[in-house]
Image 1 (tube, rainbow, N blue to C red):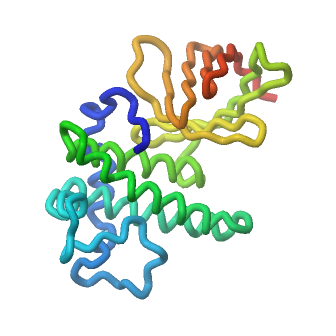
Image 2: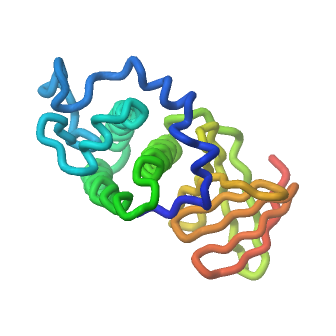
Length: 218
């Protein structure tokens, strides 16, 4: 299951703005009137007429249903981008999405499964938006890091809820989400912690500690 920054969750409870955006989205797969033949490979492939435990929770909760519809729309956009991107990108995205769907069952072990599902949906939606440039972004910043000769991190920040950043270092790319912090902006995800204070950033890149400073725009 994706690591959710410590109860980012109460702050994000079903992200009202995001949830409302999904009200006009297409019906859920298996729902009444869903044009199945016109849909690309679906995000969750849930069937509300034959639900398992997770599907039942999503189908019976209006907030989760709206998030599921919203994910369907964003996932379809990501698939379209992947198709136009590079060879194999779409197949990789579909496999990644299937793994994510399986991870939803981990929320059944959480003390609040509904909240866990809501947060997991929200983080997946914003991850897709940042990975495939589907949300408004700020001008990328290039950080020069000490302790790793020639190491630079290109950070692109997206106006998602929660705020998201795409960090590119060499051939590696990770998506991190902003959590709560006493000072500065702290982003976490995929084994990376990125903590910004002014022009400086403290980075823990999968166990490697880096001290970085943003460079002036050319």
